[in-house]
Amino acid sequence: MDIKTKLQQICQGFRIQGEFIGFSHIKVGNVNQTYQVRFRKEDGSEKDYIVQEVNTYAFRRPKEVMHNIDLVTEHIRAKKPGQVALHFHHTKDRLTYIFDKDGFWRLCNYIPSNTFNVCSDNSVLRGTAEAFGEFQQLLSDFDATQLYETIYHFHDTPHRLADLFQSAHTDQLGRAEEMQEELEYIHSVAEQACTLSYLRQDGKLPIRVTHNDTKINNVLFDPTTNQPVAVIDLDTVMPGLIAHDFGDAIRSAANRAGEDCTDLEQVDCDLDVFRTFTMGFLSKTAAVLTHYELQTLALSPFVLAVELGSRFLDDYLQGDHYFHIDYPSHNLVRGRCQLELSKRILEKMPQLEAIVAECYQQVTQHPKASASPLKFTI
Image 1 (cartoon, helix red, strand yellow):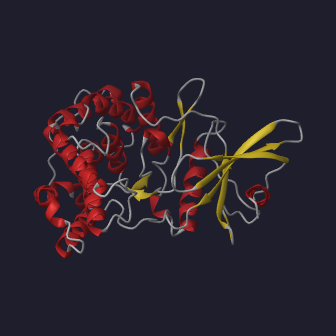
Image 2 (tube, rainbow, N blue to C red):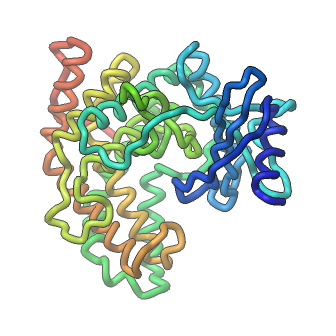
Image 3 (cartoon, rainbow, N blue to C red):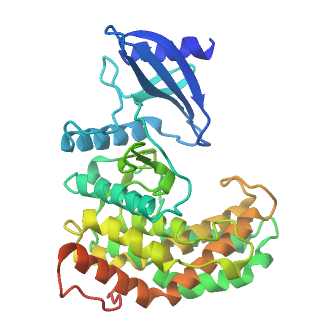
């Protein structure tokens, strides 16, 4: 079946009304196949939709993925009546997917927008932070236990580190010798890197809905006002910690050198980026954060940098099966870059903690907000 006929069939299955007049293949993203389809309504107006074929190799439990997405997007829509919000359409059986011999399909509304891949503009960075902050705010009363854990141990740092050390011990490809310095460093900071996981295990941090891919290109901006309108790419939405979303955003945005930098002297945590993002994020979340959550924000990018660095190194030891690589040592380079970033973050921890406190004071007008160093009893 040709793709045009297939898209018409899928749209019919989702009860889209009107005349199918065309489609385009959107070649953004490396996982799912995405198409923009256009219909002409009875009144002569045109309306677009997004149809996606989900990669079921990457997402082995796609029904659980869509269960999570459906509950989360419908909750957000109910909180934003009359406003732009992401909406996945349902079949007559109220399913948000069609699973047939040709694949796993879904359909959502098309939102006219701009997206950005870099955050050199502070207003865009602030907007990104506000969008992910509002995502947390709107879902702060949502029971995250309703969601599936679609990727087991995704931000289970002790589990990730244990996998790395086991891979280094077996060393099936003889690569462990190349990363002895990195392994020693991870050993030395392991307890601190596992802080969020330990706090979660002790019940000191609330389980929330987390996005788990808080990059700038997962926020849609209004093409006229340049204000954020929606958070997209919800395939990794599941129960988690708010610090993981905050920390991953900082880890990604504040290192101006990027994830593939080979000159480690260029790797750093940009304090201006940290401040801008923190201000935007807290402007939406300060009222819902617990004391412990607030105190974990400064530490979180360090945790995420160590965790991702360990994942890169583990993939390198196992033959580069998970992350796409452009050259043989790519994952080793990525791992070293993340660990260098974690070192720079640790050096600046007092400054990061002070920035969090200052931003919290500004958005809450709370003069006694603490800027004291993070001190937990695990």
